[in-house]
Length: 224
Ligand SMILES: Cc1cc2nc3c(=O)[nH]c(=O)nc-3n(C[C@H](O)[C@H](O)[C@H](O)COP(=O)(O)OP(=O)(O)OC[C@H]3O[C@@H](n4cnc5c(N)ncnc54)[C@H](O)[C@@H]3O)c2cc1C
Image (cartoon, rainbow, N blue to C red; front, top):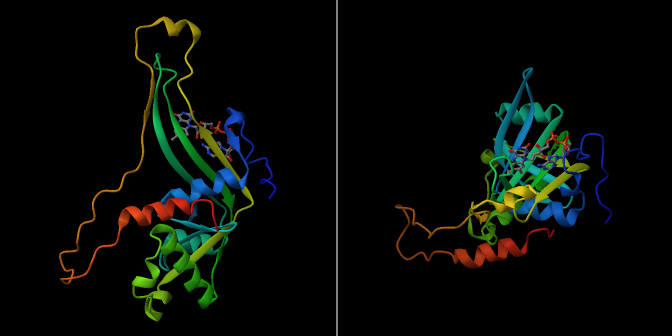
């Protein structure tokens, strides 16, 4: 598939070599991240709100309470900008100036659409649950009509989207290589802890194999 076109808004001016516009780079970043930040104008003021997201094909989904001011503004067709960021490491340079981070991030621009068809809305909520914790949907009670009515599902058709990726060691000034200061990268990653039973869990219910499920989740990055 051809990469996303670079637009006036998405063309990287600062260090453009770190920019990517292909789905093979962009989709795994979106799929790996649990949280995005959505910026839009709410009642005349700029607002940025963190929220969970998921992707299906070229669509970037969010959901929430129908009463959410952010979702109401988006549903009304307000322009939005969305960011997803994964921090992969601290880049420790010999100079304070050249400290940095290794990261993978995505920025997308657009207007959201509301999923109005009930069957499509239920299917997209299933995608959401399966993206976060594969296999979970078939084990849980699905949303009832009241819960569905209280929930909005919106999506952005991804068309104007960019990724920026930094990898590798610090980029120090030549003369600073003579310094005695340690330099390099401290890799960072999100790590799952051990499952904790709900105190109200009935006896005899086995916990899921979280390691296996998270491996499955990882295998799904970038896949539709
Ligand atoms: C974890 C993290 C830490 C960072 N720390 C710093 C910092 O401390 N100081 C700093 O100056 N910069 C930092 N950056 C880089 C920062 O995101 C910008 O890319 C950079 O500041 C250039 O900004 P600009 O407005 O000049 O971008 P421009 O290059 O003018 O942006 C033009 C377009 O390029 C795209 N774009 C730009 N940046 C990104 C991005 N990060 N991800 C996806 N698309 C992008 C967007 O579509 C944007 O509209 C960091 C990035 C990340 C992810």
